[in-house]
Image (cartoon, rainbow, N blue to C red; front, side, top):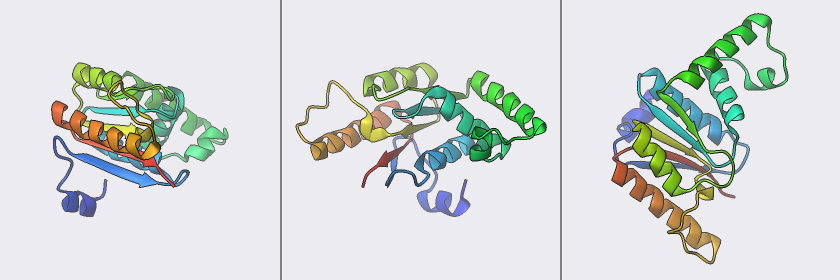
Length: 173
């Protein structure tokens, strides 16, 4: 969504792993959604994987972005009837669009599940919200630092095997 950044990064290329890391509550999920929606608007198939948020919450955020509505106003029930109708229409459109795939609900998402969804839908761009919470039978670690290193090794391997760019976000303090 930002031409200067796109030029600097030379776009997202197959096998790229781009990671955005910040503390909680600064807008990482909104940033990831914005990136994926720009690709979707350009006609690309996108996959959003979440290890933290439930499907309805993610879809509401995405629909609010597409409608250019305030997510906080929408959540607090402050939308006009026209805005509510627009939101409902866009929510349904996204929900039934086979180019916009949401996967995962909660802390029990594995690399194996993500790869299965990648193979089934073949998205052009993958976004992973809460990448640090992904698990796998291949991750064997006794401390958090080792686990994080193995998660990123697995993410890069996933991108390379499937020849798809992955944008991951992670919370770290």
